[in-house]
Image 1 (cartoon, helix red, strand yellow):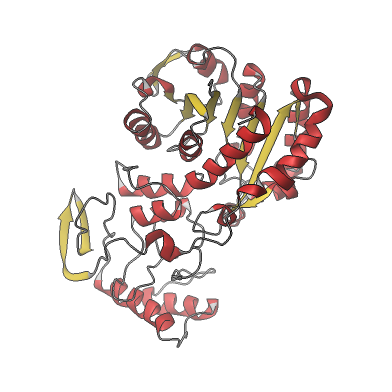
Image 2: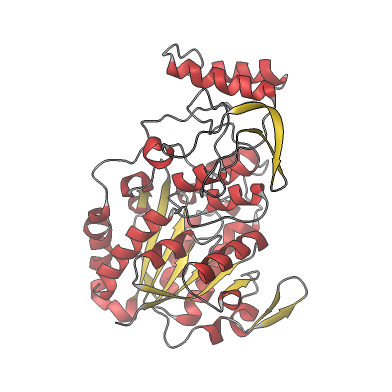
Length: 405
């Protein structure tokens, strides 16, 4: 049975590719990503898990804005060499998947940036995605991004208007109201609240008059059929991982400092970040406040005051959040690379923020995906990834709707 030929743009460490591969329906022809750490992790995963011996060639580290070189090959002092997508894709390409970096569209990003991200080049990376789509003319594409995309207005022009017009000009039909394309991955077996916009585009000269009806069927019937009966909780995701307790001393493992016990066994990437004694006491107090039912620190103002008392600094947003065992986690963000203060472990005895493995499990990465490199890079790539379990269900839905699987 022939597989569906796919390329992944803005692939990161491969959340979409991982989920699509798990379906058994897709054959990854190439992945494009510009960050080195993400490429190293994705290459390792494709070679070791998905038996791709030439993964180092098929994972292309390059700037997608240099589209002609990406397509036809390049030799570059920073990015190395590649024969280009044109030679890596054999025969007709069926599907393009991926989504540009979301920081330019995210509400949080606009709040942090003094110009509201209006001057950020990433606002227009969808055009590079579209140029690759126009070149290969696949039957369909899947474009993923944050809901903030729907309100972004760089140059005072709504991004959604540009996307709808340019995709239409390229010969693709997408859903008319993108608000109906917002998906919460918690509905699809992922243990976190994480809303994303999923745009399915169909080539109009392939699907003709049926394109709009197929798209409506996808959002109203086919994809919702892959929802779970009840949300997965934090306990479901990480409850059986070894506990990591404060030790009162500093240990170094694999070059990383930690003040917590070391996990024994085969669970990779399950090492607590280093926390000083002051933070350990604070995390324990915040988690115990919930465990006891006292709940003195549930309000945002109380946590902002606590932050000021704790650090001597002030903040317009609250810095502390303890995850709840019997609920889905809050969204796993790339910001975890800087700190885990909004992802404090719910066990007061462990008194720490979540580990890389816990973040990966909440994102639904399997335990046999071993992350390599700096811990900050690991947190960042996990936070930016599409959850593989959602991607798996999405891949099944697309395969069923368009390819008869």
